[in-house]
Length: 289
Image (cartoon, rainbow, N blue to C red; front, side):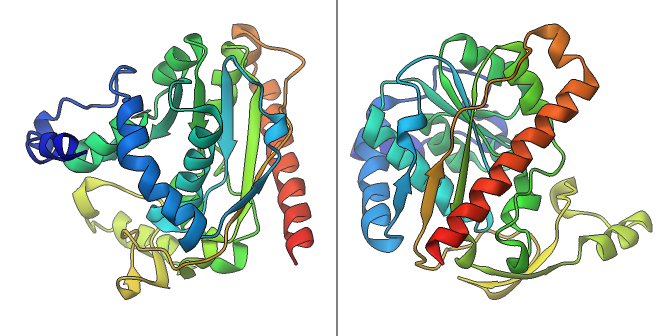
């Protein structure tokens, strides 16, 4: 572990960072076992007291696209707890990758190193398809910032933000989709409102965005370490209990390039995924009270 962190401290400037998210070889099973898993285990067992179910739905091998709706701000604790549970059950050698926003490599050098070692790759169809072609598991959260920063009143609503690229990837690569839903993590911070529509009007009048990025959300939330935070700032999640559910795999009637290029069919597949995830989340909320 010491050698790993020495390498991390000696990592080059983010703009010259060798971990750019465009390689499947940066993933380090040993680092996952020795660096990440002990930390995640403590968080899993003590801080978030995680419970999960539905693992019988996961095929023992082969390509798979795991699609989730995540919660809790940029900390996204349910995502990391899902990763811990996955590696604890299937080991770190089974190839598994997660799609991460390109800004991780553009602006956050040390974070990029950690993310790449854990299996993060840039969120691009090319990389998702390359991983699936190697019979790997790929984790994607299509909703992005709109998902993790949705208002607390919408914490039990699936938010995939209308993004359908993952559907096209699954169809092209003949990959089953395994939806994942969870509750609890969105109580780790309280998003009061999203004032993005108001700021978008100001942006039209010439207001610059941080780092030149339009994040599509600008939340006001209560949480650590800021107390009251404005904008999509990083956060430390409160110790809330998390329950994660693995849903039944969804395989579509059609697949291949022609299906992926059929806009109406892609829309229908997206609606099916969203509806089934919402139904399962509603069931989980009812069960958990």
